[in-house]
Image 1 (cartoon, rainbow, N blue to C red):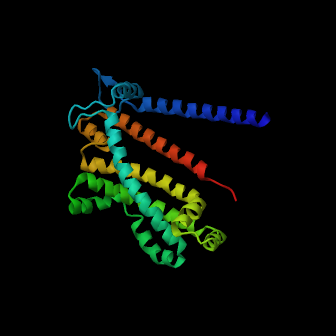
Image 2 (cartoon, one colour):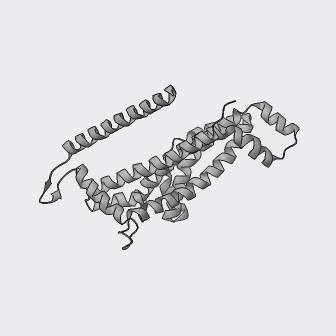
Length: 267
C-alpha cells in the first residue's frame, strides 16, 4: 500500500515538474518571439502562431498537390521508409559481424583499429562518394543511413557477445548444437540487452542522418520539408517541422526502451 502510494506521489511530482518546465519554455519562447505586423511575423514566430500552423498541418497530413507541396504525413512516411531500409540492412550486417567479432577476441582486436577510424566519420561525409558511385539520390541517402547505423550496433553486439559466459557456449558445444541453433538459442538471448542498447543508439543516429541527408539532396521527406519551408521563409512551418522531428524521434526511442525492458534479464 505504502509502495504504491509512493509511486503515485513520485509520478505526481514528475508530472508537476514537467508541466512547470513546459510552461517556462513557452514563456521564454513567447518573450523571444517577434510580434506580427499586419498579420505577418517579421522575426521568430511565437507559440500561438506555431500552434495554429500545427493544427492546419495535422488536420490534413496526407495531401499531395505536387512535388513541392505534400502533407507532413507523407513527408514523415518517406523519411521513415528510408530509415527502415538503411537501418534494417545495417542492423542485420552489424549483428552478424558483431557476433563473429565477439566470438573471436583475436579477430576483434585486429578489426578494432579500423572500426575506430570509420566510426567517428560523419555519415554525411560519405554522401558525395555515394552520389558519384551509384548516381541515385535515394540510394545515396539510404547508404548514409546505413553508415550512421552500422557502428553503434556493431560495437555493442561485439561487446555483448564477448561478455557472454563461456559456460553457456561450452554447454551449447557439448549439446552439439548447430551454429544457427547456437546463434538463436544461446548467443542472441545472452547478448540481447547490449544489442538492443546498440540498436537504440543507432535508430537515433539514423533519424538524425536522414533529416540531414534530405536537406542536402532534396526530393521528399521531413528534412526536405524543413529546407523547402526555409527557402519559402516560413519560419512557422520550420519550427513545426522541428517539433515533428523531435516527436518522431521520441516515439522511436520509446519503442526501443520498451524492447530493452522485454529482453532485460538478471542472472
